[in-house]
Amino acid sequence: MKVFMTTFIFITALCLIFSVAFAAKHLPEERGKTLFNDPKAFGGSVSCASCHPDGKGLEKSGMKKEWKNPAGTFKSLEEAINACITMANKGKAIDVKSQEMKDMVAYIKSLGMKGMKHEMPMKEKGTGY
Image (cartoon, rainbow, N blue to C red; front, side, top):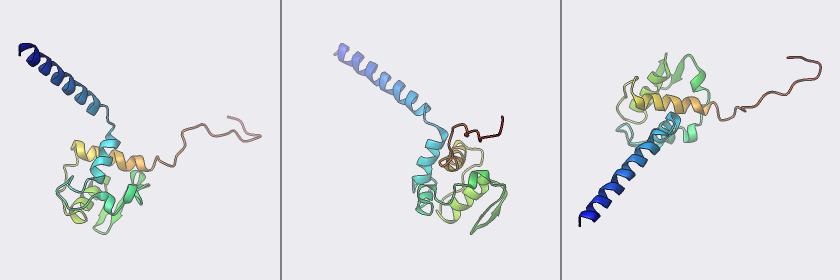
């Protein structure tokens, strides 16, 4: 019985260690995407993806200086996100300095990176670097 208990505790501890290590490796944009697609993430009834499937329409949002949506005009992406959460999702606004907000912003900014190539441009004939 003592061997069984020791083995059980050891295996449980290993599982906890690996699950924490695995969770720590997730990127902010991955956590943001999870929140974006979760209808209950902010206490609301629909997800952000209900209006923006796969982030559609938000591709340039990470590069703007001003955001407009049906709720008004906002000076920060965080304010615009909270407006959508409270108005469209019927949820509770999240703290603009919270990890959840940082993750949401990271995901929305990553949407603009989807179409960009990460390679050197080809040199045109007759031009130098």
